[in-house]
Amino acid sequence: MEPVAAPPRLARPALAQSQLAAQSPPLPAANFFQLLANSPAATKAYLSWNGALAAGGQLTGRQREILALAVAEINGAKYDLEAHARASRSLGMSEQDICLARKATAPAPNDKALLQFARAVVLQRGDISDLDFEAMRRAGFTDAQITEVISAIALNIFTNYFNHVGRTPLEPPPARVPAGKGRSSSL
Image 1: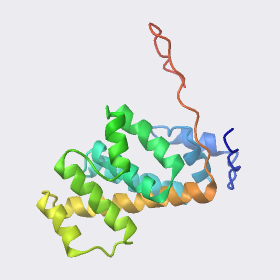
Image 2: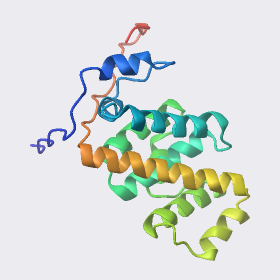
Image 3: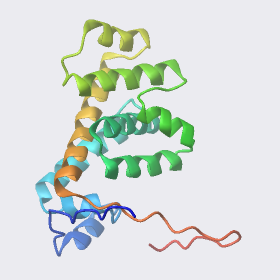
Image 4: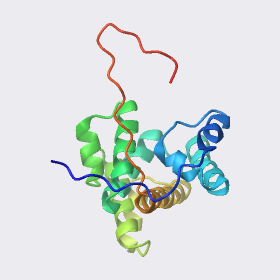
């Protein structure tokens, strides 16, 4: 028998769903966003930071996801592990890739360097050695990319801590569509 999850600590604002739907494009109805909606300023800050890294950054979506998986694993962030595993699968990553990222390693040398760097930054609270830093340089990462990696680490730590404090409940897995059936476009 699995232990019963503790209830969320933060309220789901009555306007949360309409606030999420009012975004352009609308945000997913994820529990994280529902609880974050307690503060429109925090929601705006998160969306701005995440959007800037995703739209204008030099890191790929895959790199941002493996980084998120490694940081969430270090922080024991169950909600974030599940959310980023789903996002990684949607990018075509295998279960083995996801498992390796959670262990802060990867077969590709540059991905491995990225994950080892992230691990060092999180575990050493940013006080990394010159060797940790130089490993990123040797892997070909530029100052701009290293800056984005640090920013992505900090953003992921925010979501990990927020979901810990708020006890954000996991979303149920997406419904499986029987073979031969099309997916509906409505959520």
